[in-house]
Length: 142
Image 1 (cartoon, one colour):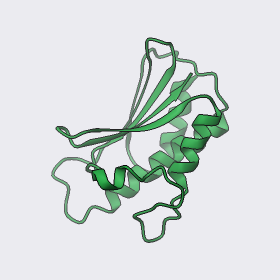
Image 2: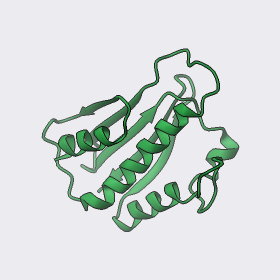
Image 3: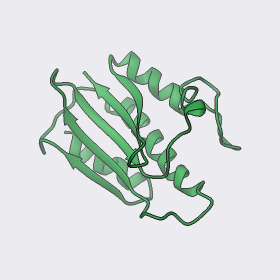
Image 4: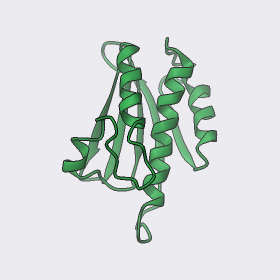
């Protein structure tokens, strides 16, 4: 079941996380340990994005997990935050192994997460809402 799984992931991230799952009894057929690695990495990155902000944010720092299905009945998990957009020149490189903008980062987290999703038959992609200033990483589980 997706909702209790996301609740466990949110508790690990040490930040308030809004969770929305539609329908409430949504099931995903996937390796929980692999998907938990991906979700944990995305939540960690979201928290670090807030910690990296130089000034006081104008809006409340928010992380959101939204799970739902698409027309093909794949399970979608969106991991979103409002810590600001990833610049286009950086966004085009974030899934490349060892690419990082962090002084203490290895650059392996997002590339490994994407590879886990590919091996699982799914995908991991970046979507940015420039008007709202929201960055979303979308996990698709077929």
